[in-house]
Length: 116
Length: 114
Image (cartoon, rainbow over all chains, first blue to last red; front, side, top):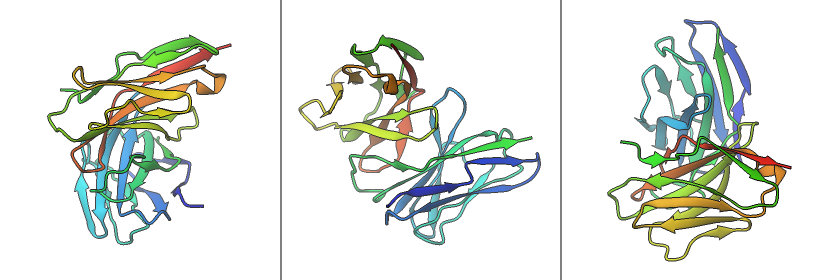
């Protein structure tokens, strides 16, 4: 079955530590995205990648970093510079950044990060 | 300015009745797409329905339909014959131009009562 895998589902870290959230897709999609969701709110775009070895900042990129070394993988690092990292993080993909897809983005199950 | 506005933080509906969730949008692009997603308490995002800006007919998918009023820039989701399993958070989202990056609204929490 094709899909997006995010692991782990729950993640706890101490304040001041960097943490990397994993996102893997086997849909052969070119574009991948990271969103952040705070309780009772909508999704906000952190970073996105249209193609391997290329990525762009979204609306709330400060305190985050990403890499796209492989088409299937788009890990997100939450750095100690992120002031309020506790949130629900969703990874998504789409066929391409330019192709109009009626499904929009395909989403992974998400990772709930709690920084203590 | 908000690009996607969902003015109903919470909505309640009786089982088997229809409910309309509101969404208004703001864009200067002629080509855009509007999406509705459902998010149950588990957190996954489930795609429900899509409306393209050039589509002349309102989109329908089973019990879901999208009431698209282009001049008013609204794209309301109508759920017919509500079921208990419809209780969830619902998000309206927009894609502008030819890209696939989405902008989301704040969501509406729908509760279906038995």
